[in-house]
Length: 96
Image 1 (cartoon, rainbow, N blue to C red):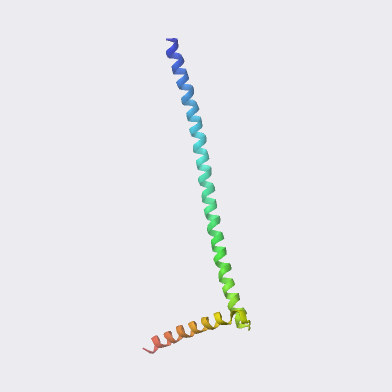
Image 2: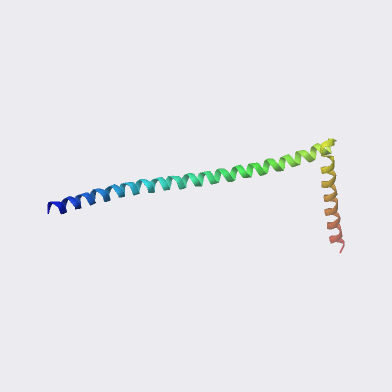
């Protein structure tokens, strides 16, 4: 009977240890999920900031070209031609 009691005690101890480890792992998982969510939000904000900066960069390049910079003249001419074509298309639509 003493052996059976020892086995039961051993099993109880092991189960208690496993439950404790399980709880630790669960808490770690919850913390990691919160961290992941925070990092995903930060990543989205940084991507949005990059998009804004890229748009500003394009705008500044166009403005620089309009101010007479030879470096971006070709890009500016292409952009202006595209805008003129778009305006012509709008005028044609209104005329119909």
